[in-house]
Length: 258
Image (cartoon, rainbow, N blue to C red; front, side, top):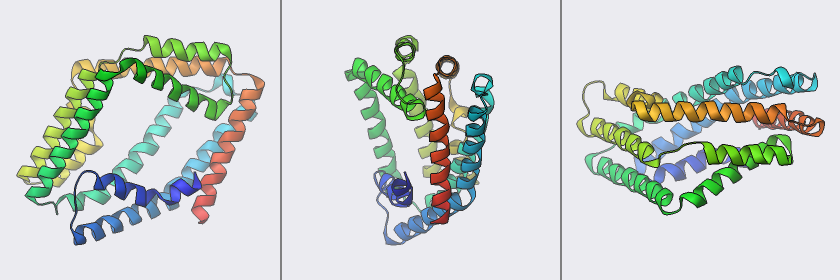
């Protein structure tokens, strides 16, 4: 993780380069913005993550796992994410003001191409994607708990089979968001950077009622799965969880010192 984190600014530049071709001055501006964001995150956010993970590990060691409520954890993680994503968007927004008409059209085409590829991949092999989702959930669970029991494996399989997902609803939301984003970039109305920021920070503003219901239902079902898995943990899994939490906290503190 330490190696990957230290390459974060480079990885972000590669990701952004997939969407638009910057000129020399813009590349330097992007590099500086990402370096500043990376420095801010390392110095201000990683210590917060480490403190929180150690607090959770203490609760596990004290035998309080059965009383751990997921809702406050979700709230705290959401706050971590929103703080970081908002800072990231604010770092990049000045660059958006530098895009010319040709670059905006290039961005629009690449966004649409990636959206289409995502939808086609789902429609071509939904069974394969379902299998991949099951594998991802199992992998994430094993990262924190170690090997899963047969009961926990069955819980994960049942969740993947039961949870409803409509890729067309998701695709329509992506279309709506991208259309709004590109329209603002093309027209550049008064206060357009503020509008772009609001769109990035709060994409839920464009969610349809159907899509919102689907997302809320999936969230509740994931929370229930997490409750069930935590309630079924063995002593060995609880020890693994505490150890893993402390290892991540130690990694974060080491990164702050780099």
